[in-house]
Amino acid sequence: MSKTRLAHVVLGGCEGCYVSLLDAHEDIVALLESVELVYSPLVEETEMQKCDVVLVEGAVTTAHDVEALREARQKADTLVGVGSCAVLGGIGGLRNLYGRDEVISAVYGDEERPGDGLPGLTKRVRPLSDIVKVDINVPGCAPKTETLLSALDAAIAGEEWEMPRRNMCEECKREKKALLQHSAEFVSDSVYGLMELDQIDPERCFLEQGLICMGPMTREGCGARCTEANVPCRGCQGPSRLDFEQGAKMVDALAAVLPAGGIMYLDDLIGTGYRFSMPVSVFPSVVSEGDDEDV
Ligand code: SF4
Ligand code: SF4
Ligand code: SF4
Image 1 (cartoon, rainbow, N blue to C red):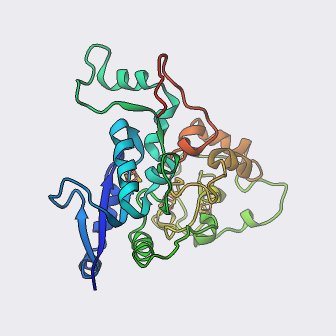
Image 2: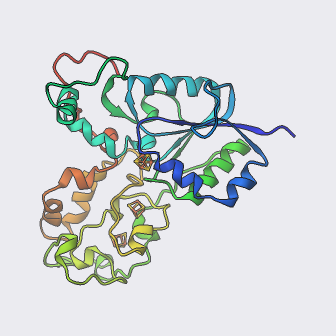
């Protein structure tokens, strides 16, 4: 039986999704019995051929990313967007709050600009689906290894794979009492930064302790791994429905349970509510003067 031809393309991201795949350890050996890795940062091949499945991680951030993504789409029977950068624009999407020139100046200063030959930045960070059709989306920063493998198995088998639909609180095992009761009282009288509390109860819902947790407006599917590790969810799987405004919906959700909607996330409403989903939000991107490219 011929092997599935698999490619892995990396666009604008940190390559952490790649590490998540490598974390499969011996399962990768089993995978390679049915899969031939024909194009990836791990193989020498420099030109992508026609493939059955192409995994694409990272967001579209440069003109080179646009080209590489269009080529991947053209060569792939099934295109899988891997990670929150690919699916939502991801954490780098916060650059959409600034104009392209502002970002370049902040990084390089006004004197020294990146030289010729470097791919130009797109005027805003975009998820893959803004440019091409994506067959399977696997959110998470980075996606849980088991989740990624299950999506990859589906892609190889030519089956559909759907993201989980409930929110993180359904998956989280922390005890929630006040949160589930209809009450005129807030679940906590105060809102705290993570470092302000001497002790955090490892069994109890963070919101009930006055700590901001993005669980109510975040898609489940990671095993609630942060809350298991006594850290509030930061929302990396994105909103439980792609058409939900993650940050705005969170203000709405918190209004009923914490004072002033979580004291507006303790001064970082955008960075907390839209940390991973700014490019799929309704916020318009800031565009630098003279920007005229369509990407
Ligand atoms: S989704 Fe997260 S882990 Fe994956 S490339 Fe983007 S920043 Fe890195
Ligand atoms: S708000 Fe956070 S800690 Fe509380 S149940 Fe939801 S995910 Fe768990
Ligand atoms: S708990 Fe939240 S921040 Fe942590 S991995 Fe899951 S979705 Fe991402």
